[in-house]
Image (cartoon, rainbow, N blue to C red; front, side, top):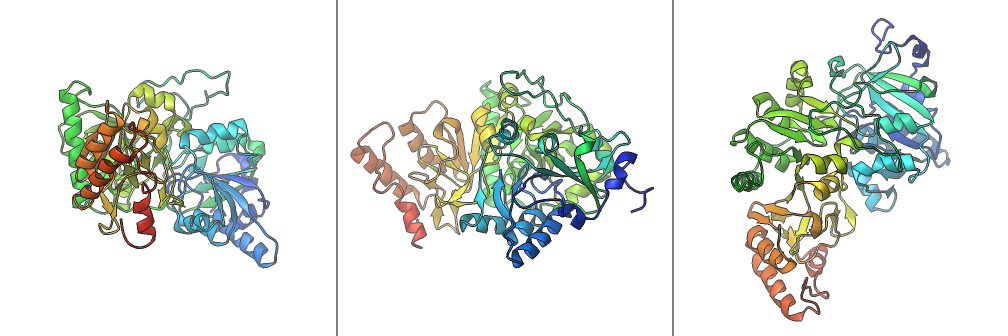
Length: 504
C-alpha cells in the first residue's frame, strides 16, 4: 500500500508500519494481550495468525510459548481458532464460541474465565486480572492528529488502549471510512470512590467522542490489512423459532394492554442467534412503532427493523451481520449512521444504564429447571459451551427479563426443562419469563411451587411433562423442606441418564 493510499494519516506514526510477522515478534511469551473483537466483528485479521506461527515454531523447538488472550467477546477462527490450534493460549476470557478453543477448555488444556461482559473493563482497571502487556486493536484509520477511527466493534478496546504497556494496531482498509461518526467513546468512567452517574437517559444520547484517544508513545507497530469480518449466516426461522416469537409478541401486546408497557415498548435487548432474529422478524409485522434498542450486538433482525422504520434507534457495541445484510449496511451507511451508535461494552452493558432505561431483555438458554433457574453456559453441568456473555448484565437489571429455548434438544431426546439445572448462570431471582415453543411462563409474583407448576404446564414438551409432574408430585411428599421441594437423590438423574446415553 502506497503512502498516498495509506489510512495512517499521522506523519509521526508512519515509520511504525511493518509486517504482521514483525509485529508479532514484539509479543513475549507469557504476555497478557487485549485483542479487539466482539461477536465476529472488528477483530485483528493478521497478527493472531502471525503469532500462531511464531508459537508453533517455538513449541516445535521445545520452547513452551503461551499467552493470555482477553477480548470483548467471541472473535473468529483466524484469532481464537488459530491460537488454540497451536496450544498457544494459557488463559482466555471473557467469552468465546470457537470449537477448537472450546475443545481445549473442556479437555483441561486451556484455562478460561467466564465473566459478565460489563465486569471485564473494570476488573482490568482494578488490577483484578493481572497486568495487561499488549493491546492488539483493529481500527478503520488513524487521523492526522493521531486519533483512532474505530472499526465494526468497540468492545473493550478503550480499556486495552488505555491500560496496555504496548499497542499494536491493525489498520484495516476493508472497513468503511464512513463508519466515522457511528461511535460514542465515553471517557467519563472513574474508579471508586470517584464514580459519577453516567449521563445517558435514552438509547440515542451521545455522551462521548467519535474516536479513540491514544498515547502515541505506546504504539510500537502498525500493520495494514484488507480483510472483512467473519459474517454470521442465519438460517430462516424454523417452526419452533416462529412459535417462540409468537408467544413473546402476544405477551408484549398483553403487557401494553395491562398498562405495564408503553405502546412503543421500552428499549429492546436481544441475544444472538436464530431465535432472537425470529423474534425481531416478528416485530416487523407486529403493531409496535418507534421502537428503540439498547443491546450488545446489532444483527440482521434489528437492521431490517431500522430499514423498515419500525426501529427508530439502536445502541450497541458491535455490528455483526450476514453477507447480504452487510451489503445493505455498507451501501446505506449514511442512513444507518444516523440511527446506530456503537459504545464501549462497559457502557452498552452497564447495570446503571440498563436499570435506568428499563430494558426488555431477551436471551437464549441451554436449559431451565422447574423453579426458574437458568443454565446458559454448560452442557451436562461441566462442559462449557460459549459463556454467559452479557445475558447476566441484562437479566438482573432489566425491566423484563426473558429466556427462551426450544423445549427439547438432540432430536427430542433431551428435555430443556429439567428438575434441577446442574449449572446455574441466572438464578430464579433474575428470571421473570421463560419461553419455549410450547408456551410462555410468566413467573413474576409467583412462589417457587407456583413457578414449578407454571413452567411444567406451559413450557415443557408433552413427551417429558408426565415425568416432570411425577418428580414434582413426589418431591412435594418426600422433600425435607416444602419451600423449594426437591428429591436430592434424583434431581440430576435426568442428566446422568443422558450422559449414560439413555436419554432423559
